[in-house]
Amino acid sequence: MRITGGIFKGKKVNPFKNPAVRPSKSMLREALFSILGPGYCNGKVVGDFFSGSGVMALEALSRGAQVVYCVDSDIKSCDLIRSNFNLLNASCADTLFHLSVDQALSHFTTLGVVFDLIYLDPPYAAPELGIDAIDKAMASGCLTPDAIAVLEHQAKTDIPQSREMSIWKQKKYGHSRLTFYNRKS
Picture 1: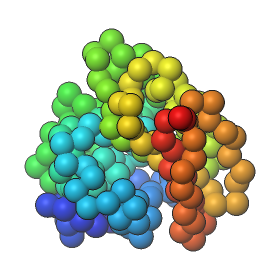
Picture 2: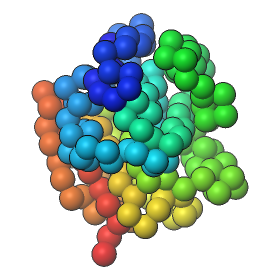
Picture 3: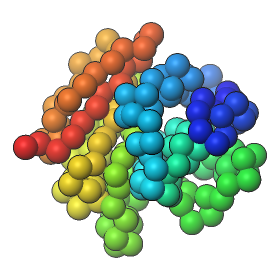
Picture 4: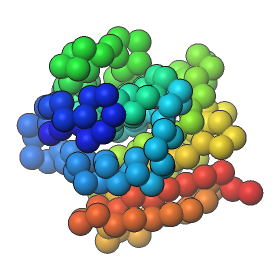
């Protein structure tokens, strides 16, 4: 697995070795940042929830994010994230959280962390976990007024509506779909 853009472009990171864990494909990662636009990540605070290998956080960091936070409830995922950051000589010592997304959002609220972008890649069988996290992030005040949330989910799955954010774009990439949300007007 390689980083698709920015200062780490072309650098290899390790995928999860469990066949049940599906990393975001390079085409999808490249498309995400193309949709957001060149320079979008510059100086931004980015959250990678249900982080898996941490590749999406590394893509954002590579593209100029000020800080990236990774959240995953699986200890093996957290070990892999730490290893992938080390491969790129980047640190995640203070920004990697072995917590559920709910626990992490509570922690971020306490710390005063506010995100410009959150990327959510819950298990494909449970896209409602991502919608719930979007709504909780909004309700907890962890998103800037112009924050964007991006949910990766199975293309054929109907996802529930967010109470707090509106869909402004959806794009299909193979068996995956990216759904982009912004604050309801």
